[in-house]
Image (cartoon, rainbow, N blue to C red; front, side, top):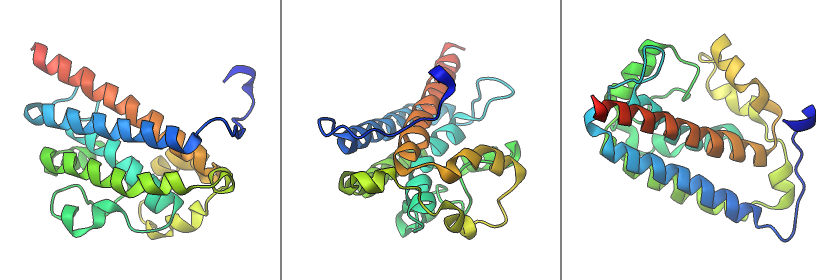
Length: 201
């Protein structure tokens, strides 16, 4: 970033930070929902040999919000672990990243596109009110992420640690703005590019 300094949180009473984050995160989940509906015939397609499948990419884009807010920040159960989604392929019992290609392909193949669309709605219904209720102090606090990761001891591989190292000491607002917002839209763009390539063949 310009100047090379750390990102800082400056509260502006004239800016509805909670509403902005909720709106944009909801937009990302809605984008994943629309793409999953359009991608049913290209679920196993990948843009290049180094890319993930469309199915995994969209699954990851939805689950990263659920996992980051509920498991990583709040230390509670995820929406995908509820009875509505356990049998849909969305619940894997694993974290949504840091896995090898074979495992990612397997997850993408078992996810039902329609169920993923319904899941994005449920995730927003769950996290939206929580975001709205955050105070300035809670937004700027660093959650007990290391303690919360104790639920996933087997998966804390080198690949996983490389991806989440910066997240361990990040405040809540940054975890919402980056993994739950910017990261989701980045993967949505990746999925859209893959779908355009698939449809042009």
